[in-house]
Image 1 (tube, rainbow, N blue to C red):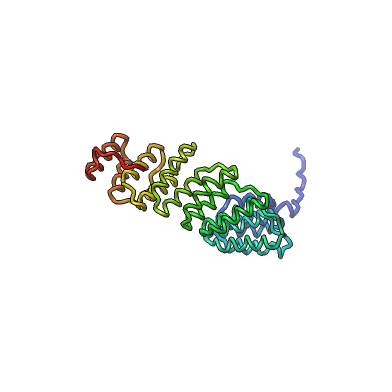
Image 2 (cartoon, rainbow, N blue to C red):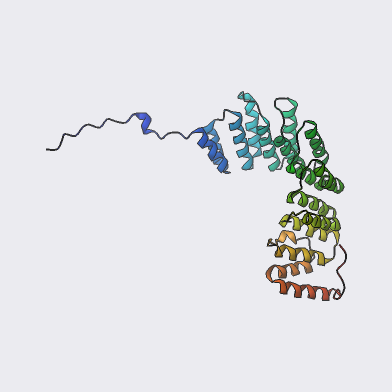
Length: 310
């Protein structure tokens, strides 16, 4: 005969409820999402308690483009007995900068430093410099670079890139080029493609196409390959400065031969004749490009004449 069945003891109530996600799992989920509803839910579940957790939550709002909530959460840190550190300040400053609020970003940066509640580092200075870049605050950017060095901090490539961009947006071309050629060298920092592109963009804003092309040649000599942004700025400089159309066509052909994508943004400032040539360059091979160049030069009465000097 079969043995008598034993009664099954009921499970404890604690085992019937799904376990809550761990704090590390909540933090990991925060890093992966940009959805505002998800961020709000995760932060409510996490109830941040440490500097690291607050920084992570503030950064999540920044990635989601909600600078107001980032600032609101930053303001609650002290009320909760958690003192800001350079990384939490950097997170809220970056959130404001990315949200198009550079003045608010710099205000928070200065207020946080005034309290002497933390020791600044390169990360928080770079966040402030990015805000200077977005707002064209070139004098302030130079002051921050100088202050970094006074505090024994070494500006890195990102620091200089933001300062160059700030100068370019403010129309301070000579200062931007001085930072690229002298400032970075003195600090022992090698310019990268962003540095060169920011300097060429500064030339573009002033219509200095010759200087833009000189910088393009200079970065090649340094072994730095131009990208779409670099070419786009140089092409726009040619258009704004009234360069011969052949210059833009040469750059567009070089973009294609380098495997870079020729976008509408790169040619929107060009004359219509150049834009038509661009469409041909992007769809034909080298032979088609050469024939099109010849037709353009014939129509402009340029056949048989050398290209103008750069």
